[in-house]
Image 1 (cartoon, rainbow, N blue to C red):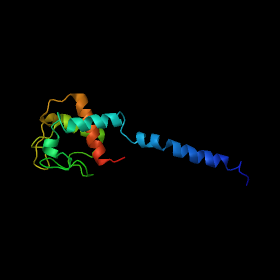
Image 2: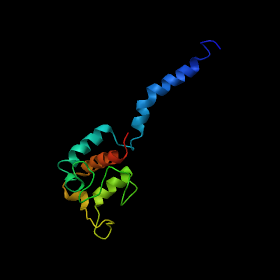
Image 3: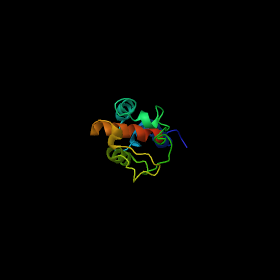
Image 4: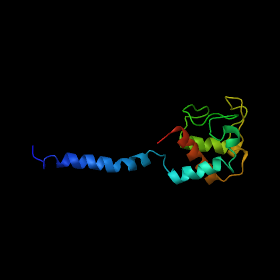
Length: 127
C-alpha cells in the first residue's frame, strides 16, 4: 500500500479531529449557547435568588441538588427545566415537601428564566 492510498483515511481522521469542538457544541439543547449558560450563572447567583434555596454551589439546601442526575419533578431536560421554573412547584405537586414559587419568587424576565434554566441544565450535563 503506497502513501497515496492512505490519504482518504488520514483525511477522515483529520476531519474528525477538527470537527470535535463543533460536535461538543451541538450537544447543547436547541437554542442554548455557552453565552446563555454564563448569563444564567450570573442570574442564578444574583437577581434570580436561586442560590437562596439551592445553595451557591447548587448542591441543595432547602431546595434540591441541581448538580446531580436526580430530578424530582421532571427528567431534567432543558425545556422541562424552563417550564418548571416558570410554573414553580406547588405544595400539592411537591414530592419533597418544598414549595417553589414561579420564577423562584423573583421578578426575573422570561428570557432570564431561559438563561437560568440553561445554567441549571449544564450543571447536571457536563460537556
